[in-house]
Length: 463
Ligand SMILES: [Fe+2]
Image (cartoon, rainbow, N blue to C red; front, side, top):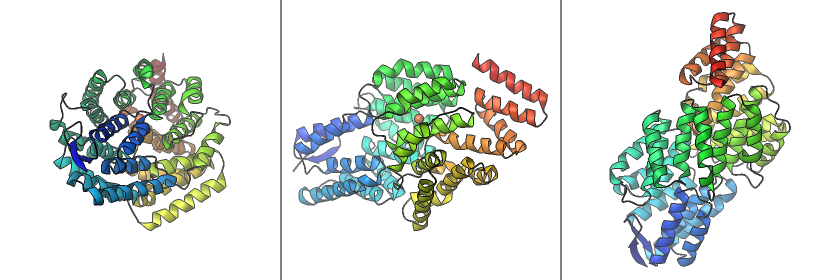
């Protein structure tokens, strides 16, 4: 076994330079969310089956699918990495990656984050630890954590380091989630200058446009970048979701449904994010009174394949919503029963989040679909801020905020609905959908002048 260096100068244990080059290509493809990532990894492992970091990476990739069915493969990769390290040796950084994979595979994502943090303190150019740290800070709703990690490694990166642009893109997303929109957009656009196909940076800029209510800019932005998504993995579908969301805000529901059918929910096998995107669109449309026809059936079928995953509370909640909306009571009851048992295990990171937030969100979905609006409000209102713990972006979790407002209005709690809408309209001052609803609630409260002003503002935004 020899020791070489990766493309960023980090010591790495591998059998050959060819294997290290393959590893670099794999990490680069992963950062670019490219479809050929798995092919590069396969070639790397063929060049060196005992490559510690390549086996660790395979384990990480298996876990990134957030599928219970792939846990076994993640564990076998962990064993392969350990075996290779035992036979040929490995360095301290590689040993820490094995520990992080072990922690994640056993459901302790906070421990995995602590290990990546330790790696980045010593080796701030370990871009794999950086990307995975971003992933788990994101799915634990810790946007400040995302931003801090980026800030700490930032001084160790510049244009001369391979994949600097990808780090800028990560930094852009962290800043966006923390509300630093101008700097987020600046860094995102710079990342795209470096690599026009950088879909993660493109996504970060789209988020800036979403959060600042620039719907038309957002549509033009994604349309202008669409040709660069060729060769990207299913994450491209999430960009289509963003574009549909811009149309949604403008009240262009026909366009949303058209995009949904053509781009948001592909015909092939679904990733968990595809299901979340689909649920998120259809649920919002129905709250606005749009007939989504029989579209829930396909989403519920896809969710049924993954209903016992319990890997990410964020996705479990979306699966529950699909079952509730498709009136699959047995599937919903089974998912909630499984989630209850999982929450009681008190093992790992996600079970506590399920206990505190996930179960309530699943039950709120069930209550909403059976028009038990009071129960839905009682479940959602006390958790409206803490719900960030289930992860996802502000734009994604807006689903639960809208659901609370919708439930409050339907429960006849117009004062609460108007308070929540006042809050929302201040934060997203250019959201025609929210303003229209605000106008309706104000009208129900007899506040005619304020209702007219909100309606006029909404109309001016969609002209
Ligand atoms: Fe997004």
